[in-house]
Image 1 (cartoon, rainbow, N blue to C red):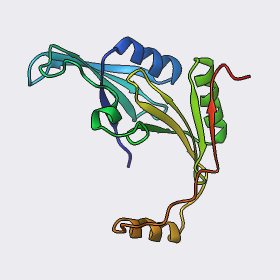
Image 2: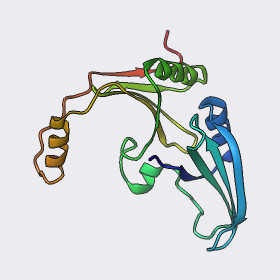
Image 3: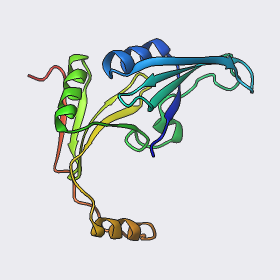
Length: 175
């Protein structure tokens, strides 16, 4: 089982559309338009990912009370560092991850690439200022991994994980 969609508010639906359809390659397939119970109205745009039944959706709000000065960066809104609340999209393998990295570089986006020792990720920011990630699982999970994870649920002094195997900051201007 997976999730159906993730829904986020946005300030600039045109920038969202250019990023998620033009750069990410997701397809805008549906919009729902209607009143918001608290007042005002909204458009709810659905972008289909490569899986036919998985979507990311964005709300464009109109005259909705309390949305003046809307903060769309979900980490800033929660008062935590950017890497805490982020959106991660699965890729099939490292070749697919490399293809996605080249898409982002071609679009002029800065990237952070991290080999986490069990998965390999690239990160950039979307027009909502949200950290987005493409991630390829490169390792497997052992009984020892599960035992460590379960112990961490209640430990107040857990052992730190091994640092990433590599971290690289990549700019489209790099040669």
